[in-house]
Length: 425
Image 1 (tube, rainbow, N blue to C red):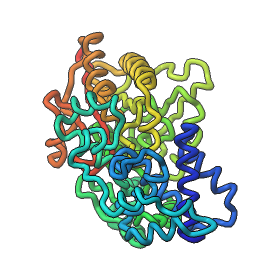
Image 2: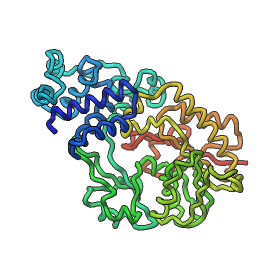
Image 3: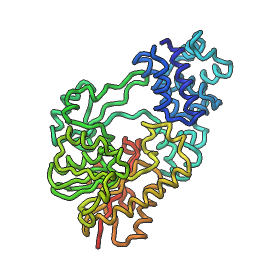
Image 4: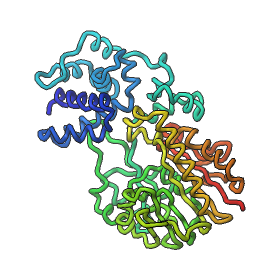
C-alpha cells in the first residue's frame, strides 16, 4: 500500500471508533478482514497511526484547531512521526487512494501547529475534562505531565521466571529483542517501544518463551506482586486472578513451596491459567473455579496473604489501550467502585490474624485507590496499613499513608496503586 491508502485506512478506522464508540481492537480487525491486500507492514503502519492518534486525540485537535479525525491523523504524521508538510500533503492528495488534498487551513495548521502551552490541563494531558479533579487530586500540578506520559507509546516489559531460569540466561535468550534490565527488580527486563511505523519484535518467537522462561508483564504489575513480601512456604489466595499473570509471579516468588489458590468470579478469565502455569513450571497451584459450588470452601481465615488485583477502570494502562480513556464514563467509574468495595469485603474473610491483604489496581484515580482503602478501614477496624514496599528504589513513590503510586511520568511504568493491610485481630 502507498502512504495515501494507509492514511485513508487509518482515518476510516478512527471514524469507526469515534462514531460507533467501538473498541479499537475490533475496528482494526474489521478493517484488516476487509483489506486482504494489506501486508504486515501496512497493518503495522495503520495500527500505529490509529493508536498514536487515540493516545493524543485532544492535543492533536488543539494543535490543528479542528476536532475531526482527519485533522488529528494529519497532525500525528507531522508532529508525532516528524513528517515534513510536503510529505503529508503528498499522502493526502495521492489519488485515488488518499483522503483528499490538504485544505488551506490544514496546510497552515501543519506548517505551524498551535502551541500547547496555552491549552487547558486536560488538553495538555490528553484526558477527558471530567477526570481533571481526580487527576489533580492524585498528582497536583503535575497532572498534565502525568497525562502526557500516559499518552506515549509503552515499552514491553518481561518477568523472568525463576522457576525455569535466571536473569543471566534469560537476557542471552532475549538478545535479539534488545531487552535490558530495568534496575528495579532483578527479574524485570524491558524491550524499548518500537518506531511508530514498525512492528515490535514478537516475544513469542523466542524459543525460550515456549519453555516458560519469561512472561510479558509490565514492571508496575511485577512491583505490585512483589508487595506480597516473603511468601515462600505460605498460603496465598489470588482472589481476582484473571488470566493468571500475577498468580504466576506470586508462584515464582514462592519457589514451589506452600500453596497458591487462584480464583476469579468469571470462569472464562481462568481458562488459560492452568496452561500458563504448566508452561511456567508451577506445581503448587490450585485453581478454584466459580463453575463449582462454593469454590472457596475451606479457605476462610487460613490465608497468610490475600492478593486482590481489583477490577478497575484501567486508567493506568492508557498507553496500551488509549481508546478506553475516551469511552470511560462517570457511571462506569461508579460501577467499578462498587465492585472494589465488594471484593475488599469478600477478601477480609480469608485473611488469618497476622496475615496480609494486598490491594492493587491499574488505576490512577483516588476514588478507586486510597478512597477504597479508607472506606474499608472505616468498616473494619481490625486492619491496619503497612508500607507497600521495602525496596529502596521504590520508597520515593510511597504516599504519606504508605501506599505505592506508580505512573509513567514518575516511575516509567504503567499507572498502578498498591496498598498492604495487616489483619491485626
